[in-house]
Amino acid sequence: MIMKEQKKTANPLWLAAALGAVGVCGANAFEVHPMGTNMPAMDFHGFASQGFLYSDKYNYLDNDTKNGSFRFTEAGLNASINPFSRTRITAQGFLFDVGDVGKYKPVLDYASIDYTFNDYLGVRGGRIRRPQGIYNQVVDVDLARTSVLLPQGLYDARWRDFYASLDGGEIFGSLPLSKAGSLSYEAYLGYASPSTEGGVGHVIRNSLPPGSSVDGLSSPLTVGEQIWWNTPLDGLRAGVGWQHAFNFTQDLTVNLPPPPFGPGPIKAHADADVDVAQLSLDYAWRHWTFQAEYQRMWYSANSGGGGFVDDSWYAGAAYRFNKWFEAGTYYTEAYGNVHDRDGATLAVPSDGYQKDLALSLRFDPTSWWVVKVEGHYIHGTSLLADNAANPLRNNDGWFMLALKTTFSF
Image (cartoon, rainbow, N blue to C red; front, side, top):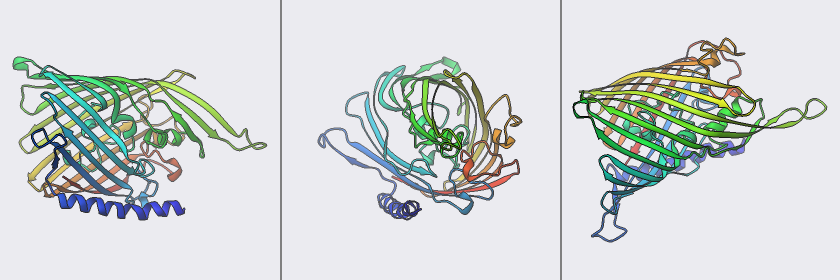
């Protein structure tokens, strides 16, 4: 309990310093010339954001949102340089906290070098951002969207350690299609690095008896692609993404009661292949933005048999009224098992699905400061991922308020 109080008091002090520094810098990035003033400059950008989450019935994304939670923080600093023709080097350090995930631990979010041969072909290597859907590569760029929370069935704020980055490489390019527009592609291969303390470990622990632990998660080899068709209709593009993670293994400890009342801790091992497919539509027209995506995940167990298929989708729109105000909305549904969408086979049927209607208001007081207010009306509990903090669950509708402010330079 003492440690928990220390985290709550340390966070505002750290954030105040970070936001103050960003506020002084304002909208302008700063440059350094590591190789002399006659050589290309290195550009630095950064951001810091603080959010607030409140829910009226269930604890969601944190185990105390029913009382209001400030455990919703992000900060990053990135640098880029073009040292030679057709060559670009970029890197970003990042930290975040969403409830019990992240815990302000600094990580190397990405660090890669690109070389572009021509418009048709380029190569990238290092720790790369995994391309998938509209938002995966810009999931930390708050200025790139209207909403506070992206549709969580596709872009869960707690899962960054699994879906955001890979250690490996990719090829990319754009192919002209004459009057049919153009085709942009990225194909990648690398290793994901999920953490036992990250979102994946949190979800696995939630599916086990209370007191269970996750001792280890593998770094699965992952291969995939993202293709965008930039249609002849200006502003309209359609995308398809796919990834396959080979032999994602987990070492688990189930802490059952000790003898004579039980067998005591039991070690278990599981591994599976994971496939994810995603379809995307994105249309920018005048002051409007329309978006829709569908994602399906196949989890195929390699040991012990079994598996499952889940899916999620959303459709949304946003309108920019002027340079300082924008409003948007989306509706999304997520299902833990496509063969049991109403949760009839579960002890708590509402754990089989979650349906969310969101309304977002975005204010841009300056080019480097954004404030967002967002309301959610939700049915279902499949994405809570913290059953210990929500022992009684049903399909009654519930509300959530999300606030967020972001400073960037």
